[in-house]
Length: 396
Image 1 (cartoon, rainbow, N blue to C red):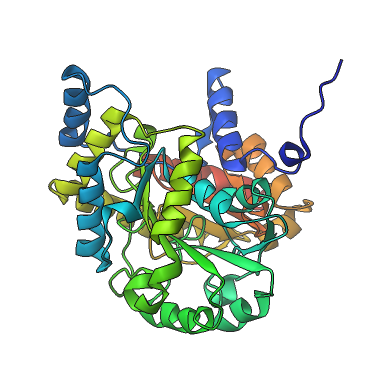
Image 2 (cartoon, rainbow, N blue to C red; image 1 turned 120 degrees about the horizontal axis):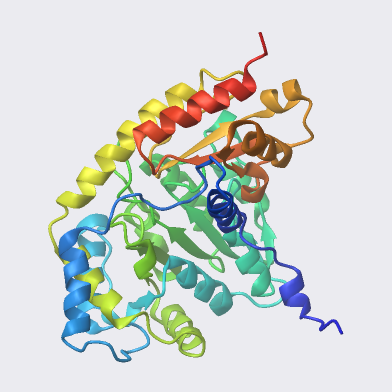
């Protein structure tokens, strides 16, 4: 007997990044010599003072339910972070702590989208955005920003994508998968478009804010266009900046009525984020930020090597990034040279021919590309380049 699942479940697909990470783990467990470049998480351990705060929470008995929306001390740390780093002022009622920024964004979609509402998601996009919108009965609208424009949407594209049904804009800077980051001038130009459409709620995903080396200081949308304060939800978390992926702490600041709706939804799904993780997050946000700078320096060095090396491979073109820890390479030429069908076939080719696991760009709304994480050692990256070169260079 086959049990039918809901139409809602049928219209979404498994996360390709999680799938390829699981594939790499399975191949290694089978004894295959593979290099996994799919995982989007730092290879560093959680800094000792942050881990110690989590341990202290456990040993002191701080292991029970908390307020659904987060403990006051963590909310205050988040408020201080937004003011210190982004010049955005929030009150406690405007802050929500969730089990990762993924849940934060999911809550936002459920809180503001009704059936048939459109959500603009510039492509290339993080793989989960469109499916979250679909699960909220919304319609993803994905204008494409290609390499010729630095993988960043233009004001003209944004304006053209807006319809009477547009309710939400989800935008990520620095970007997963491209590492592209919007400048203050670019945010200002996009903001001028958004100011003309007061119905649109904006979700800015700043998760990679601290993994950044752009030519000008990092800016969030509200830092540049404070007039959008009443309808912008600023999203961030501890996973990437503090190597805390498994601790599952995401957070946001935004309009009180939207945040209250998000908290109500969370209260009927997961309730509070883990109590000991919240204590660790307080230590992360309030503590010495030297660990962040150390990790960022390493990511920048890896970026410079890896992007440069990728651009020496036949049929591969990779733009330098401003942040995050991904190389997003255009492989249209390599696909054509090898006589392959598409980027999925190319990714499969690299697994079997080179023992290198990457994520196909189609999952990010960018066919003909691949995403590779350089959140691994320099030696691993050098080996991956060597293997890919052997698979891509003509024999003889």
